[in-house]
Length: 129
Image (tube, rainbow, N blue to C red; front, top):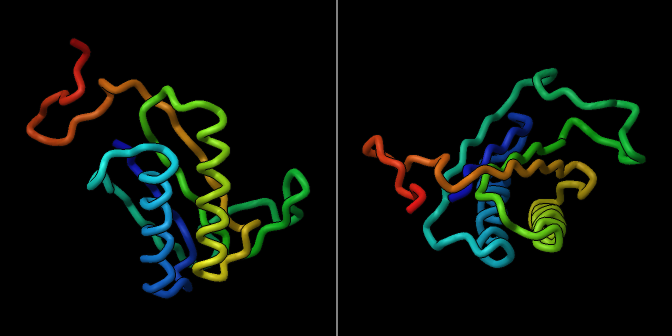
């Protein structure tokens, strides 16, 4: 039940945006054991100057205006190993399939409890039993 937010420059082509979306979903299925058809994504395209990052770099990583910010809110409970594998597979997949520099794939995971979701009808589908 992840919710994925992807923020990137409006200069990216529609094909690149679709590929980034697809890579994230595929990795969620393969690495993070997300259920099939659980693809909820919000994609934001931004004008120049609307994506802010340290131009001098951070933690030894240099960024370009092609930076892609990815934030995934999902259920808590995945191991550090799964999260590391997720980061690696998403960054490598996006880089290999779109030509985006791997350094420009920035990812943040937000762990939440299962009851913090409503998929419609004003119901808590994963309410504690």
